[in-house]
View 1 (cartoon, rainbow, N blue to C red):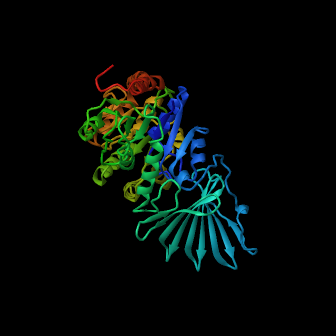
View 2 (view 1 turned 90 degrees about the vertical axis):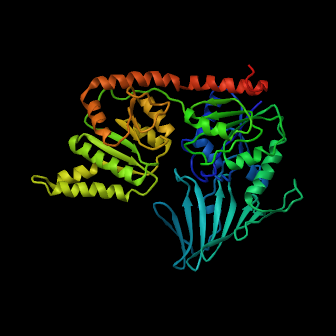
Length: 492
């Protein structure tokens, strides 16, 4: 019997899910010969590409939008420029991140590649009098899947199409109302798209034998779907606070709950209306691949800036500037999804002060500024590249990033946090600090005493066994065994 996994991928419209617990769980299950079917309730026109880029090609799936749009195609066969009919005098101008199409010196259309590889086309913007008129979303199976209609640059209607180009679902963006012609229901109008998705998803899940397992990412929409199922389904709810909604919701008919770390347990217990087994299983497996045995002359500190308020991040940056001024072998890599103009300004101010000092050269000032590297959120592959050389992970957020912490364990990298987590043993593979000013003393210890590095390597080896694939799989086997036996809470 397959395990039916309901992810939460609505934020991944055209992107590869990054640091997503259910992606890693699907890999772990398939690696251990468990049959998996994905139950996808999100609109993902590049879904085949997403599976391929995550090493999950060939995985069985059911899609709510495929059902609504009467799509039975499974193979990836993306559209190219020449699959469309263009005006005979159209000119194609290839740019770095798009293809402009000009007709009689007027902007006729723009073709956008899909992130991140660019080997697929994502969408086509059709222009009229230099204003966006329609946006065509391209499905990676070779058809236009959705048409977004604009008036004065404002979305007024969205049409979801069948592969033959007929309108299957129409969403009015002014009222939210959705109209559809579905053979499986006599209802033709729904108050919004979520209501329609909920209806078709519940219908599909009710066709599954109750003894089969549903492994569901905790979201408000998924909980609404599950709450409409009759009793008897083996529902396992997974929660990962790194990326879950701020409001914790647990389905009333769930049989088990899986948290990603102990700190999530109180909120999950408080929001569970019935007493069910609650296990803690880390979402990401550690794989020990130790880097350098000791510090060297190029030492990047990777700072995860997110979840830090303005005052604290300014304090941290000024502390890091002081460190760099004392240790020119250090580089600071700042990863943030937020604007970092304020942090750049603090570095620029320190550079100006340095330039005014006697004996300071332009080259010295530039070298100092080059030691601060600002990067947007990175993919898993990019993070692996960074962590091959990273010297230390700094994460002062209230909830340190679980994936980064797992990477730090895998690479034997010390961590500096402000809160305790299962991935950091204080005084062994890192330190729990209260104030940014403490960073300087700790880093100096790491730089000056190789014994600290020996402690870090020893702790990394031990922790890597606690979080490796085999350990995680053994925990999941217990959960799956309980679900298959249909045991009640407390029974073995």
